[in-house]
Length: 208
Image 1 (tube, rainbow, N blue to C red):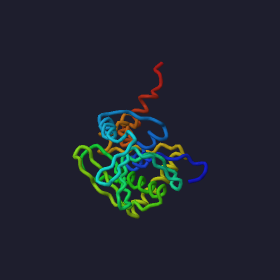
Image 2 (image 1 turned 180 degrees about the vertical axis):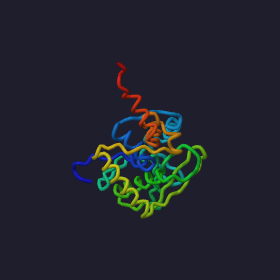
Image 3 (image 1 turned 90 degrees about the vertical axis):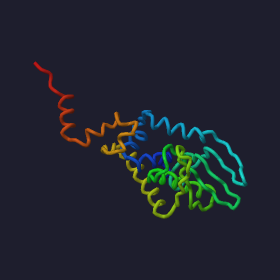
Image 4 (image 1 turned 60 degrees about the vertical axis):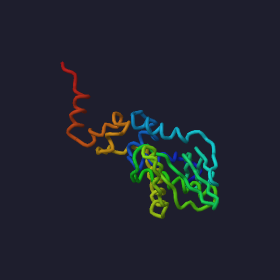
């Protein structure tokens, strides 16, 4: 990170891996819309949005813990970080929905682990995704492959922000649940004929 770079929000990494265009709409164009899925996500995070800590069986748990990394140029907060008696530091990211693997969530969790390592000068080799709907944890190993993915994602987001270029839309199953679908208009990008017809209708010459 150079002295001129602004810190990136940790959430931008999750958005980019899930969909680069979604990331650009939120973090470049500052656009956001609510739907049932984002509302459920907010409800899940409401469980841990208030800063504070609690100790249970020797494990101290801190909610909404501020995070940063000078090396990566990241800033944000962890939903929950556990501090174990043996010195282990264990970040937990809360997500709405059933227990399932999703790379975007794992990249976000790994970035939190890397922030904690820099802040606390400890090793953080593991973390977990807590799936609120099923009340189950899915442990994630923060290995070298995931760490490289974090670094690559940081570089990609910075390049997008520097170029101020909106990535092309994707049109697949992810679009169905996306709150930004109306802003994104992925159908137009997926069907050139539809885009041309829409452009022709929008810029049709006035009849004499």
